Image (cartoon, rainbow, N blue to C red; front, side, top):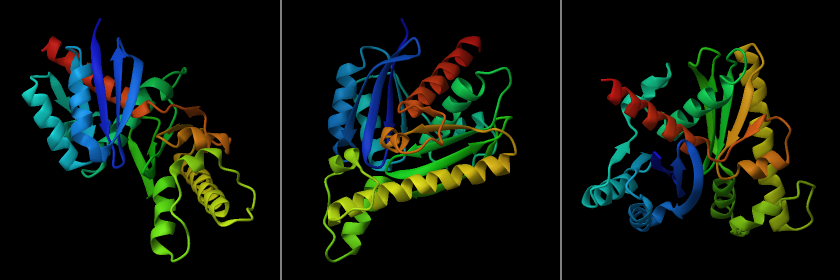
Length: 256
């Protein structure tokens, strides 16, 4: 069976998964600041399969490339040419957004009798929206602080607000609160949800027809608990996109 080890290097964490015949069978995470530790585990778990990597953190990319090369792993780094798989992406767009967009189009927007526009919301260190038209072309996007980044900014830019543990976000109550920590959590989560909902209203209006909303990223399940504006929640969307890109490239090599 064809096995791939998929790696998405984000600003805060490195997400990895093993995919067998296209299905993700296991996944795990490392803090991005521990890129060497992540690279060693990737080597240990690769099992002879191809390693597929996208990254938005250059120093972590260098570490992964070096360790894969030293271990003689068959590795495939997603780069500039993959931006051309869907039309319209600008040159500096993150490869995680490209991979998520490809997965959303191929796995979800194409699933019905005709392709529909899709908006991909990725809730991670940053929260992004990537709009794609019915013909699969990039139709604009948004970027703002993610939940964790917003909380850190509040604590870092104020004199009295505390620095909160990220685990406290998972039990967020959005009612007006009566103490500081709960007020911060309710405010940040509510603001994030309101942002996502507004983005989708604008994107759907500009695309001009029913638009599928796909939510992914480390905070996707939390956001989905508090809004009905998304159609699909897929925390592994970016990793699935990496698989689709690599499998398509390998298929093309076989035909050539």
